[in-house]
Picture 1 (cartoon, rainbow, N blue to C red):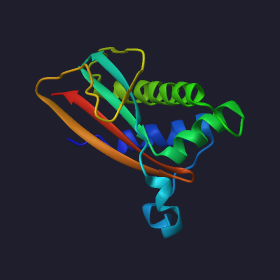
Picture 2: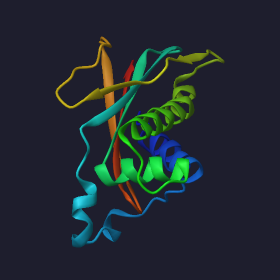
Picture 3: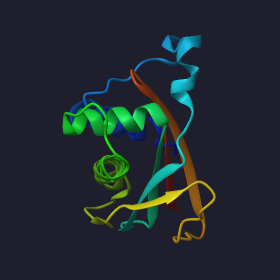
Length: 152
């Protein structure tokens, strides 16, 4: 069973409501905005447990990270701390919307506080027998990869 459509929907709604950023189709990304799609080195991970163990990793493009923080805070030039806080908040909201899809028979899912890490760093969570689904979402200000690891 694939959860890609649920992951995409949770991410799209979060970006729309929280960051005022709207999904676009991949075909709408023109050659001039390819730079907007370069992923940043900054990632946020949110672990979940309960109905199943897993984690959500959000990796935005550099331009998306700037737009997320700027739109959420109503400022033009967010600093590094503001970008990190915005990334963690968006990852937390997306995770909160994704975790319940793994709930069966009313089981609860608990999400942990978001953690930041960079490319090259490994996550502290190791999930045995896990599956991974990756969804790329294109938005009017960039793109993001959402990886969801979950136990079967």
